[in-house]
Length: 311
Length: 311
Image: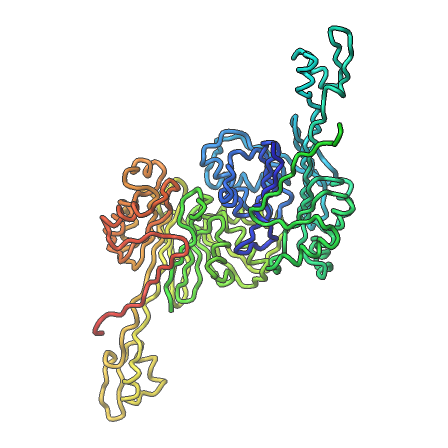
C-alpha cells in the first residue's frame, strides 16, 4: 500500500510557464487526498494521469489565490463528469461562500454531496480519521490565517507469522486474540508466546505539509520525526528580511525546522518566480539539512514501508 | 496597425491536456482586449508571450466556469506585478460579487482601479468606444444569460495623397478641411477637388465572437459581413438533438449562420471533449461554408487591411 506525494505545483504566487501554483496529491494507502489547489490543478491532475474522481478529501491551507483558485474548476469538472460520491473540503469558512456563489451564478446543482469543514487556526486539530490514517491541521504564521497538515498512518497491530500458524496448527478463530496480544495454548498445554507467533507491522508513515509560513518554531514538535516534511522556501538566505516581511521562509529556515524536528527527508517548494535555476536553493538547504530535495511538477515522493529490525 | 485574434483556449467545459477553456486575446489597433477567461488563461497569455498588463478591457460572455474561472487569477497577478492602470470588466453583474469576495478573503486591496460594467442581455448594446474602435454586446441563446461581442474599427476619414500636397503646394493648415471633405482653392483660383487630393482609408475591420449559443437566427443581421466570425460548434451534425438540449450549436449550424450573414471567414471552437480529431468537424463546417478554420491554442487570426479599389 503506497504512501506517495505527487507535486502538481511548486511555485509561489505568480505562475511561470513551467511552474504552477501549489497543489499536491497524496495517495495514502489508496486514500486520495488533495492538499491545496492552485489555478490549473485539474489540468495537472490530468497531465499526470491521476483520476480526479478518486479524490475524497481536499485540504486548503489558506485563502491566498495561489492555493485555491483551481478548486471551483475541479469541483465543476467532477460534477460534469458524473460524480456521485461525497467530496469533503477542509478550509477557511469563507471558502464555502466563495464556492457556493459561483455554483449559483452558473445555476449548477451538484449531483454529489459537498461538505465543508472549517479549519481551526488556534491549535492542532484532528480533521479526519479512519481505520488506517488520520489528518491533523496545525497553525502556521502567515499574513492571513493559514494551516499546515500532518498526515499519518495509524500503527497497525503485529502480524501473524504464517510459518508459525502451520507449525503449531493454530485455528483461524484464535488468530484475532493472538494478534491483539494473546499467547496460544496448544492441546498438550504448551504455551506459545504472542511474540513468537507474530512480527511487527511496518512502521506507521507520516507526512507534514507546511504551507506559506514565516519561520515558526512551534512547528517543530508537531512535525517531529516525520518521514517526509514539505516546508516552503520562497526565498534564498540573502532575502531573509523580505521573507520575514512577507511571512515566508528562506531555504535556511526550512532546513533548520527539518533539522530541529529530526525529520527523515525534507522537500522544499513555493519558490519565488525570481528564481529560474533552483539548484542554488537546493545547495543552501542541503548545507544545513543534507537529505533535502526540490519539489518539482510531476515529481513523486514515495515513503517506503520500513520494519523495526529483530522484532 | 493590427487586427489580430489569438486563441488561448478552444475547448468546452472540461479541459483536456491539450485544449484549454475559452479565452481569446484581441489586438485591435494596439488596444488589447480579452474575451472570456477560462481557468489557466494567465498561463496561456504567458505561454504566447502576451504582456498581461497591456490588457485594458475584459469581456465575459457568461458565468459558466469555463468562460471566467481564470479571471480572479489574472486580476491577482496583475496586482502582484504592480499594475497601476485601470482594468475594465464587462460581464454579468454577479461577477463583481464573485471577484470582490475573493479579494476580501485574501485581504487584497488592489493597487489599480477595477471597474465592472454590467451586460445587458435584452438587446444589442454599445459597451466601449474610442476614436478608433467600438465594442458591442448582443444576446445569445444559452441556458443562462449569455452575450456575444462585436468588435469594430471605425471607418477612418479619407487620407491625403502626399504627392498632391507637394504638387499643389497645400499649406498644412488647409489639410484638416480637405480631409473632412472640402476642396482646395489655389492662389490662381483653380479648384482642386477633395477626391483628387485624397484616397480612401482602409476598410473598417470587424470581428464577432459568438460564445455558447443554440442555433440563433437573430445573430445573422448583427454579424452581417464581418471580416471574421467566431461561432461555437460544440457538436458535430449527428448530435443536433444534444446541441439543442444543452443550448449549443453544431458545425452545420455555425456554418449556416456564417453563410446567411455573408461573413468573410468563419472560425469554429468550443469543442466537446469527446472529439480528439478535429478535422472531421472542419470537414462538416466547410461543406456549408468553405472559408472556415479551426480555433486552436496559439493560433493567430489576422484581419489584413484592405482598400476600396480605384478610389
